[in-house]
Each structure stands twice: as structure tokens, then as C-alpha cells.
Image (cartoon, rainbow, N blue to C red; front, side):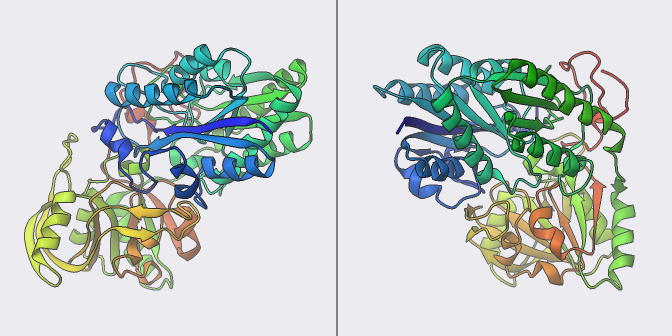
Length: 497
């Protein structure tokens, strides 16, 4: 039996987004639990699709004693404020140092955190921890598929384990794999490691592992590990809206033999590079998409889904753009549902107005992003909710949503799901909470890039990726990068930075 300390600190940072992550954002529950300390972790996280509970389950099955520290996350946004990072990092280090004897440490991190004062949040955190615990303590870290892997992360962690699905339906499974590599480190000691980078960025919609080439690439990565020669093999696509030098796709391999780790890393990154031209797909303009969906929906038996990817709150967008909503209403789309609009003030007014009442105002576009305008009209209150409900889809599986006061508004033939906390529309329960049957809609306009596919793709007639206004451009060439490394191509087969 080993004594393993466990914790987590998660943020995916869009350095071009308008709103930064405060300490309060990490304290507050939303789609995931709020800041949780100590033994409460075991109860709060039980059965949730996150790496931490997956690690807990597997590590306990292996007979280890677990020492819970803290876990927190904030919705993707702009930089983590210095105060938030320093307070949480200090808490984590204090909790680790308070343990008289530890055999190992597991951390559930994201891998794309940028703070106001550190370009590589996870690397900074790991460096501080490593300096405190010494060079020998095994430190295993699970990471998101969108992690921007850095040299500091590689240097200070004993193993980095990256999830393999997007939508991320394997988060708990990834925690289980992290426990397995931890077991190997405890029994046999350190492993050789090798990392390689690709020289191009991949837009989020084409990182989806339900389609090729990502599906086949991750199958090969899993097979490399399963053959028994690599102790662990991972591929991270990176998070394109992070303006940092080490942004982009990378592979990392751990093995007993250093030469094999190097050669396997070369082989895997070669496969990624060979697939570069396949990372492309059609991007629909908003009016074009709405007209197509209206025509297709006239005879379709299932909803046409419009992925409002550029205002995806799961990628740092503020979920307050009403650009696509304006198209739905002006083009007189019938049977359309627009979700989720993050607008706490509109939700409050809807609750004050009451069920079946109506009010006139401008909604959305409240965070100050350049070019966004409010959508003005008279809205009827069709349903109200407290935003507290159980997620039912495979991505948020097992989690209790806490999205604050919610409202379903109606205007013309369109219904609008309004929330008081920012969360991408990736679970049907968000709509059902307000009495909407997603499968009965003609058009579903969802603020998400890919995660919605886990729960909504099975009910969709067709899915269109739409370029409406937002802070997460689907074409990376629209982002004003300054810090990327020279030579990195902004798009597959595109021009170099």
C-alpha cells in the first residue's frame, strides 16, 4: 500500500477572451463541482466523468491509501488572475507539505492554463511542487486532450497522461490509466520519456475523435500503449486560442527503454504530420446555415444542429453572442431552440416577470466583446427553472448542474435557453430542465464546438459548424497572435507564424 496525495486545479485559457478567471470562479460550482477540500472530495466526485474519480476508483482497487487535498475548476475564459493562481497554488503546496510521509502525488490538471503572470500555469505549479517534494517522489498528472504540453510539465512530472476522446467521454477512464502508470512507477521506478511537436494548429471542430483523422490517430496511440512496449503513450491536440510559445499538438511517450521512447515518439508524430491535410471541413456562414436548416428541416424527422462554435463557452467564449439568434429570428425559422445564452440579468428579469408574462429589452452581448450587439425584441417567458439538475449525457455524466436561475424565452418561432452561469450546451438535460424536448426541435443552435456531439449527435439529422460572432474563431488566422513560436502554421497546410 502506498500513501498517495490527490488533487486538481483546472482551467482552459483562451488568451483572446474578454473575461478573466477570478478566485470566486474557482469557488463556484457550475457544470462541475466548486472548490472542494479534504474528505468531501470522495463523496462529491463519486460517479462523475472526471479524471479524479477515475483515479480514486482504480487506485483504491490497487490497494492504495489516498490523501485528498483540494480540487477546483473554472469555466474556460481569459487568463487566470494572479490572485486566484497564487491562492490556490499556495493552498495545494501547504496541503502537500502538511503530510509527514507521502509515497506519490496525483494531480488532475487541464494543461492549457495561462495566468496573468505565467504563460505555463501547470508547468509553474509542477515546478514549485517538485522543488518542495524533491526529485524522487512519483508525480502523475492527467491532462485534457486540448493540453498545450510544455517542457516544464514534462520535466517535473513523472508521467503525463492525456485523455483520448473529444467529446471527452473518457475523462474518468483517463484517471484510471493515470492510476495504472502510477502503480508501475511505484513498483519499478522512473521511466524514460520523449516528447515531439507538430508544426501546425488544428481548429477545435476538426479535433473531434468521432471523425477521421483524429479517430484513427487516437486508435494508433492506444495500440502503441497496448502492445506492451510503451508504458504510456499520449497525444494532445493543444488549445489553439492560447497565445503561448508551446501551443499546439504534441505526443509524449514513456517506456523502460529510452531509445524506444524516442523512436516511438518519432513514429507517432510522423503519423500526425502525415494527416495534416485531412484536418479540414466546411464552415457555414450564419444565414447560409439557417436557410439550409430551414429547408432541410421541412422534411427531416430529426433536428438539424447548428454548432455556434465561435461563442463556445467551453473554449473561452462568453456564450453571450446573439449573432446566430438574430439570423434565426430574422429569417423566421420555426421550431428552433437557441442554447445556452449566458445572461444573468435577463434570467433575473424573466423570473421577476413570471411565467407567461412578456418583457421588452436587449439581450446578450453584455460582456463587452468588440463588435457584439444586443438582440432587441419582446420576449415571452415560456418556462422558468432554478438551474439545479442532474446531467444525463455522457460528457457531464453523473454531475449535478448548478447553472443558477434559468429561463426559456420565446420570440417568433424560436425558443431561447438563458442561464445565469456560463456552460456550453453539451447535455440534453439543460433543455429538458425547462421542458424542452431536444429531439422534437426542428433546429438546435448550440453554443459548443464538439462536446455537444456526445449527447446530441444521436438525435441529429445533420450537424453544421457555423461561424457566427464570438471570441473563439474557427479560423486561427483571425487571432492576433504575438507569442507563438516561429514557423508554427496557424492552420493545416497554412502560412507559418
